[in-house]
Length: 309
Ligand SMILES: Nc1ncnc2c1ncn2[C@@H]1O[C@H](COP(=O)(O)OP(=O)(O)O)[C@@H](O)[C@H]1O
Ligand SMILES: [Mg+2]
Image (cartoon, rainbow, N blue to C red; front, top):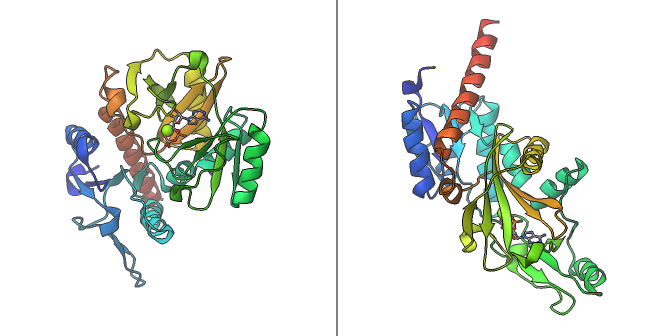
């Protein structure tokens, strides 16, 4: 592979620490890279091919590391994903693949797929009308107990609410007209912890415990990260979740209830790893780039074989 001839695009609107980690690691692997915002990409359909233009790239990128798909209107998000789909279908390595990103940013689809695969995920109800949501809430909490309301495309613990019989439904524009209600998991000793596992190419590589002051234990909400020795149960669950969602790498969120039962809460296709890097003794960016480069090499090998045939 003539790496010097084609650059890698790191798709992001906010490179920050993660962008720098990827740039450095790509350089160490012999690849030049550039940050690109999907909002600057264009499609020109004129029957001559090469429809997608990436600013700063004369030819298509050799690979695309997706670090962020900015939110926006439904149309904007679909268009941004169209660009990734278009490139993926042209044989460019897109990491994670657009289909995997779609499956995982969409909490209902993730929950449905995990549950259908027989994996433990909390009981969840998704509906459109406030009447339906209210009747579920009343039925589930009339004898005590709480439910969680989550935005469909939520991340970093933003916009999550705890609701019960007394509070009734909470209205938040982040719900965007869909109610995703989930049974609240009570943790052992009422400790506010959960587990984040990093899975790369089907193998659970590292895990950490996140400990919060409140029940939402995202690092972005102030939880601290602690090292965690991963046992087989945790590794198996995280690996199975990634297999079901057919994703090249992911940050899998797990919770354990007061009886010791684990649940898969979420699979993140664009996970941050700043917190995890602080508690492991290997270079996470380098591990991710090893895998990314391996995917690029595999695709190029396939292309070379089909050109020979
Ligand atoms: N069913 C649940 N019961 C109790 N706490 C939960 C539940 N679901 C999520 N949480 C808490 O909220 C956090 C964020 O939830 P998550 O579904 O991972 O959304 P986000 O995409 O915002 O990270 C979790 O890390 C956990 O601490
Ligand atoms: Mg999460």
